Image 1 (tube, helix red, strand yellow):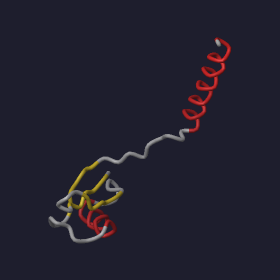
Image 2 (cartoon, helix red, strand yellow; image 1 turned 120 degrees about the vertical axis):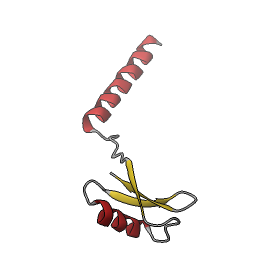
Image 3 (cartoon, helix red, strand yellow; image 1 turned 90 degrees about the vertical axis):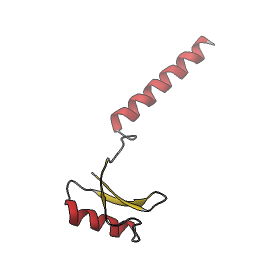
Length: 77
């Protein structure tokens, strides 16, 4: 039984080290930074991103997404 637990522990440790070293789970997290356009925003995500780029520049803006029940155009940095 102890031999099986050791094998599992070593396997899990090697897997964690592999994932950490290859950055497989690295997040490309973006932060909400601005709103753009009218509410509700009637355009698409592409229109939203163009609004964000025009108003705030790129960088800092890296994406624009229409979201929420009221359809806000949110700019992410």
